[in-house]
Length: 207
Image: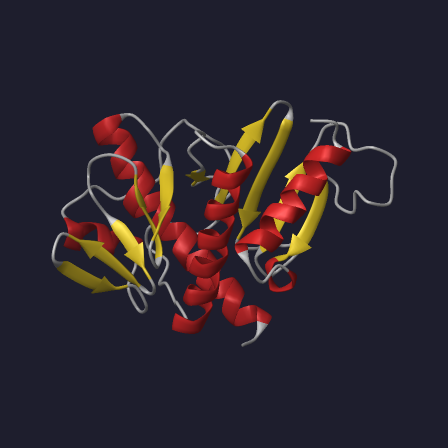
């Protein structure tokens, strides 16, 4: 699988997260929070929508994403398309009328990274519900002054990665990213591996 294939899939899923799940949920229920779910992610509140693999699931109906726009998917699900207005400034970059392309293998890779990350975050911070934020499309928690999470990738690191975010970043080679520490999820094969990464970052950050 090429980095470009992962990138197209990530951008497409991000667009669905913003325009089909988070935006309609914000307008109906007042929250932009999403959560990791089997095979992908879902809304936190009404409307009840989920992304599973390369599809959007609405009740008993499954809508393939590839070849369609967020506007078409939203209409098929009976919701108003559009990201949460006035809540954040950044986002995935794709609009409601961009045609989306999802590679099933890349979607599984991202869903698996989210699942391992979500499970490790729950071990790291029991009782804290991990949130998948539609702005940056990462699942994370905050413990004290430190952010922990898993990103599906971005312009700097195309593949899914785990991160520990600190501010300011210490002058120490351990901290290898502008925001703190990052490690590709390909190097963290199990939930325990991800937890170990988070735990080391927490100790080095003095939490």
